Length: 286
Image (cartoon, rainbow, N blue to C red; front, side, top):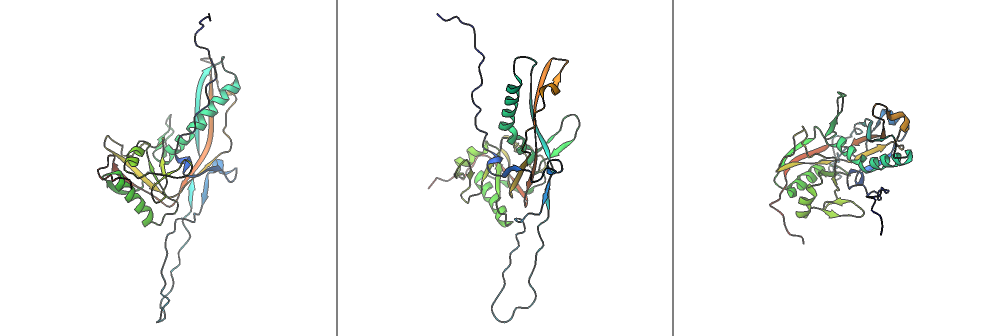
């Protein structure tokens, strides 16, 4: 008969895949183009936002006047920000390589969530260091939608009216069930979910459902957004300080920290509306 010794401490099972979200739809994450951009951010002139296009009559009589010429798009920029994850462990019990592996796994599973938070609502920083404003703050408000079907209609129409190329629709993960029930989600290749027109959905765990001025989601409604392309740059290295450098002597603890620098840009504009979650206009699939 085996002697009962209690649960044996073993290695954890392999980590699951990263959740579906912004990294599945955005351009990137990609490496910073130059090392200096890690500290200074990125700036460029996009080629996708100027949407003017004109007709020119070629029939007689001869055309009078002159042709119209447009300027380049306005330069846009993305400021760098750091994503940090950590945990505290005792000074004994874990080897340094195990601690490093665990904190790197935590970063790789959850850094997308932090970047999504940066895009939608931003975050108030600890210890009076101010706040990082969400890139969706100040979005053009399209009003309200009585159901998710109408929300998709209005958001896709806003993208079309503004000539957006490569646009996407953003919502919290819980909205996926309502959009699926309303037959608004199509399954593309890989992990991508999209509308019938091919506009990708981003269901971000880091999104909080708030409005462009910080209006909170409630029990009946929340906000959805449409945006131009989102581009993400990340440092190629996840920095993990030596554990001897982050040792807390007062409590005899190690603090494992992983940190990576990002920059994010949203091209061409952002549009939003408040949508009632349950849809009374749901049709039947054909």
